[in-house]
Length: 492
Image (cartoon, rainbow, N blue to C red; front, side):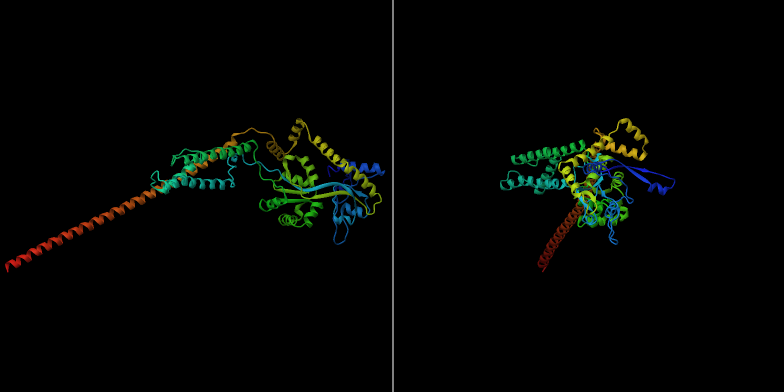
């Protein structure tokens, strides 16, 4: 397990495929733990031989038999003397082996795929998130009535001009404030000193506050394009698994495995989501290296392991492909020895001395530096490696290079302005169509109302004329009646 141990596997084949697996030798070529073990051998004057355990796991306890498997089981049965590596200290293991002073204080973490870049074409629209609109809406709703009160209230106390309609005045004030916020010109409803001061203040706010803040955000987005939201802690990881379909993987028989399996709270919820979503066997990987490769190839894969081990593998596969989370918990690693080991006190003295002096930390840093030097290759070697890669690896390499190298601002970043203009034109067109339909309906209503009023007046005129005619006939008949009556009296 680099950087703790660097191992070469040499398979000895004798014609049988199964024998090629069993007849396998290992060659340790370096690593931090190899240097620590050589230091202990030199100080305590002993010799050692490396061997690869058959199961190649640290070990887990069997609840039925009560024994440990893996390397811990070999040490507990006294088939091996010690085990040095990334072995975590747990209460369960203390019952079978004895641990020395700590060789590593590591923190748990998880690694995800690096957040991808957001669409450059929407850079101009990205500042207009939902958090901005409530403040803008409240501002638009408030400034219009305030401007109306500044004009209407003084005129009610001391009338200086005639207001035909206060409703129309309120609409004019609101529309004028909207045009000011949109940096357009408009006719002032009134021109006294109070309204002028308010208009100047509103213009400064719209120009130097809203516009400058937007320009600053836009400049930062164009200079450094935004990326998707990264996952930093366990609660965000839980949300990502539920909503975004993330898959959580852990190393088989590791401390992270036991932590999730036996943990409570957020760890228990993550374990249940992992088992229910993927299945128990499908969520385990044989090594951290295999899990890091899965994270590199997929954007929705998460691997939980030790932070130091993850950091090492991230450096191997390219830091630009990964995002390392915050520290989750602290885990300690030490050398596993047989129970009742007589020379454990001498080992502890040496380990305490080099740990307090920072020698172990320096050894780890040196291994990382060696890795960085080995990772640095010339441009000709890069060309040869790229030529040998498959099409999938070539596309992935091009994608990584495009995401890391500096690029000038292209016209693609300015497409958002045209999107915004197109959206504004569509919105204005819909409003214009709505106004046409409203005025057309209003004209029909006015015409219908005019026809009704005309018919009503015609009816009123006819009624008046008929009444005048009947009155005239009645007056004429009464006069003729009186004339006949007076004639009859004269005849008599």
